[in-house]
Amino acid sequence: MIVHSANEMAESIKDSRKRQKLSQAEVGDRVGMKQATVSAFENKPASTKLETLFKILAALDLELQVVPRGSANQAKSGWDQEW
Image (tube, rainbow, N blue to C red):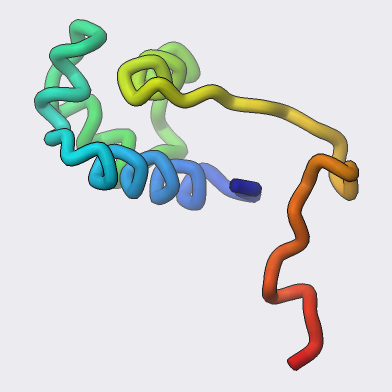
């Protein structure tokens, strides 16, 4: 998934957590953080430390990839197409 903001990233990660049927507390337990920290990330991601982001990604078995904009690795969004 391509994200362009902290809010989009938090929403994507929250969706992944829900697909895995995990609570915020379970995610926190996997990496030694409080449920409140996971909640704070999901609701106010702009104030989250990078270390917290990477712990949450690890708890959900996710990874972050950084690629140049317009890279061939990026899938085109449906919003880019004419209807």
